[in-house]
Length: 276
Image 1 (cartoon, rainbow, N blue to C red):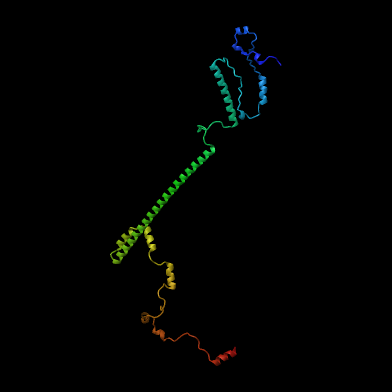
Image 2: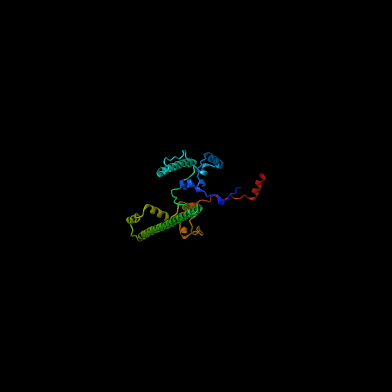
């Protein structure tokens, strides 16, 4: 070990702070010199040791194709222009790599700032707005259907009133025609005028409703009768008794023809059995 203590070691003075006079006067002063070491090989070896084998998208590191050379490093404009060109070249190369990898990196057109709420929360809000919109549309559709239903009922009521009025007018015309016909005040011309107001469809409909029997009913009445009292229908009446149009005196003089043959006597019947 050295016998010199720390207090006896002279203090180091930076080289740039020393003048020629100081250097010449005190020769024991230890000058401090700043050494710049640029060991490229050592730096590259250290980089290879710590470098990780990761995809480019994980690091996004871009190395310039050419080293940066500035003619006058003290010229601020030229120095900043060199930095700008180097950054622009790196940005173009990174843009090409990201585009080739198919990774989205451009923000949407409607993006303005970072969202305070999460995407999940905003999705719930959007779904709620959609549900409210659909509910409003359904309510509007139901209201339209109710209005159409009311309008349909109104049209139906108006149609029924029109039919009832037309029916009343037709019945009134028929009553007037019957009244005139009964009183004898209506001639053929009046009847033609009375029915000329009705169209052909109304006349056909009214004729179909007039009382009368169809052909089937008439045929059954001719075969089985047509109602009325049945008891005593075959008994003589005063008119049938006094009616002698079917009486013939000549027919009464002729003998009786027909009837059963006269029965043989007992002896003849027995004789006939013996022959058999």
